[in-house]
Image (cartoon, rainbow over all chains, first blue to last red):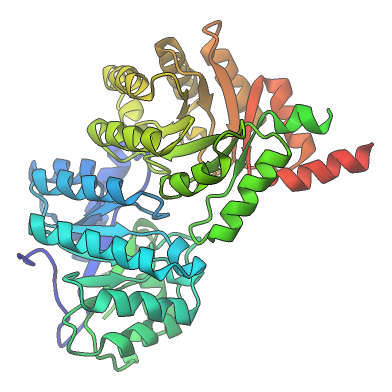
Length: 229
Length: 221
């Protein structure tokens, strides 16, 4: 399984990824945002299949992941599996899959276990790297704990704890919990939004897991100069 | 307006990502009790809702490519077929806003034609997300999808800004005499707003505030 498009944690600043997922962008706005991302040194992008195909035509960006189910995770399992096949057919190597929280909030963990196992199996069959995403802000710590336990033994390369939308404010205790549960042996990366990284000074917190910081368009447009170190 | 007149026009909505099965059950029970047009839920919840609503006369509205509309037509068609198999009666498909912005109208016409074939005899609604559109784009999109034969053009996903009443009226103008109706969604959380939407030409409303609006009606009696 290839992970060449996914940067792992490093000794210095964590890897950073631009998440470009606005609806109905005109070409000029899209170009402006990509230019700003390039100026900041963000060369990897989480994007839609449409933008992934556009990027294949050339340019300085590579795809860190094609998104599925963004931002609500409302897709049925069949739809998620079909999207994974579509992504693989089109040559992408990484998918970021947002899943819904119903089974966690309803306590139907066996159903969630089956869903995660089915996504994992399909990812292996297609040789796709998968980052699994939940909206941790909507969950209790106990629910997040249950989720991580189910994901630990999967082949997923990482867990994203926030979709980065304004409705979804993850908290530092979510990061601390997931880091403690995954430890330094899981080999999985934790993806967190830039607003949390900045507001909680995550750089100063000793973590066991590698992290990657996700920048939204709003983040990069507000940044002057380079990326924070 | 009385309660029955209102609820027959309502897609009783629960799109919270963390909605529990209890909340879904409650939504469906309320929809049966008040004879709503449909419940509006995520695709992952259709089968569960269908098990409760089967035979009740209340339909199930399912968002396709919701709320971003990023998916290819090929994938939208698959999503539609799965939703129909799971029990959806109404398909609310997010249109390809990027194609509209690029004036790639043939792309939209193809999307309309092929998605209608997949939707078959179910109720078809296309979401325009008017907050992102100019007046001209609202007219164009309403015209394209109504001429293709969609049952409804729908204003918004509720994910972004709410439509103005003027935008609802513009959609009504755009569909012309095709017979396509207008669904208002996004911010329809008061009786006054519903009445304004009706006056502008909408005949269906998506709202998660139905119980609150019913209380307003009761207090007006």
